[in-house]
Image (cartoon, rainbow, N blue to C red; front, top):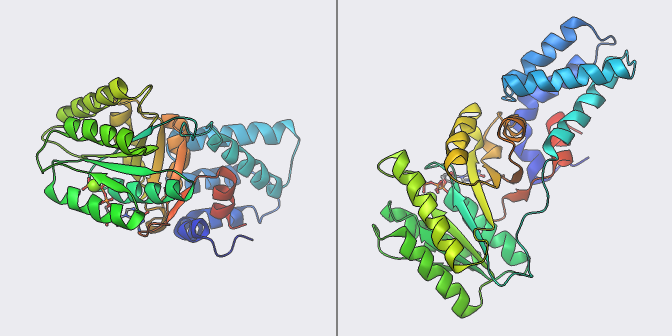
Length: 303
Ligand SMILES: Nc1nc2c(ncn2[C@@H]2O[C@H](COP(=O)(O)OP(=O)(O)OP(=O)(O)O)[C@@H](O)[C@H]2O)c(=O)[nH]1
Ligand SMILES: [Mg+2]
């Protein structure tokens, strides 16, 4: 029983609203068409997404038939296995102590939780022995710079910033020089969520990537897309835009604690083919959990 941990608490709304009811469905003894229909409806309501729900159910039905199972209880077991394997789509994060300087580029629409997530990542990596610097490359919004500075202080990370309206590329350039001069081992770059147009934003992100790549071998080593879990399926269409323009390597799902739409992780995994790396479980520095498919699915169902 996981009882008290933050992931468990963050999944409470999703569990109570939807997945707990799925367990209820399996209380009946036999597998019939109604069971499959009810299951489909619940998964869709839980923001798993139509395509992902249908594919999950198809896989589970096939497994049930193949294994000759007849009890609804067995369906739950297979369903959970399939859900876990759907989420098990990642290799290790490409951040390590062998490299002199690791670079993480953080992208996402405005308000998704980028800056808070960056502070949490700084804290997380500092606890794992990295010397962390943050680059305030969101120069579009004046308040964004001071917000990152405040978080940087709390997290014990150096922040490299220019004036509001400055060229984000110049900020990144200086931040890398600063890391190299002071022996920082991880640079995390905050970016704008919105510019005058979406086209401008994507162009700018591309420019930042090029600046990184010229200064640091194979940088950025990770490009993390921060998605707001409370937006459910909308997060998926946002993610598509970013994925088309920037080479996103993983997702951080922020605000999991504030939503019943936690089922969206399955759609992220299947429809976007992106690994979920971390989940945000609150507004504090330590409210970040490395994503663990089994713990997540257990938390959804209440085990
Ligand atoms: N409950 C909860 N709130 C969060 C979490 N992550 C971020 N927030 C809140 O979401 C709001 C927006 O977060 P920011 O980090 O400023 O988002 P942003 O993407 O940097 O926004 P812009 O800089 O405007 O583009 C803040 O009020 C955060 O406290 C989380 O995991 N849980
Ligand atoms: Mg921000």
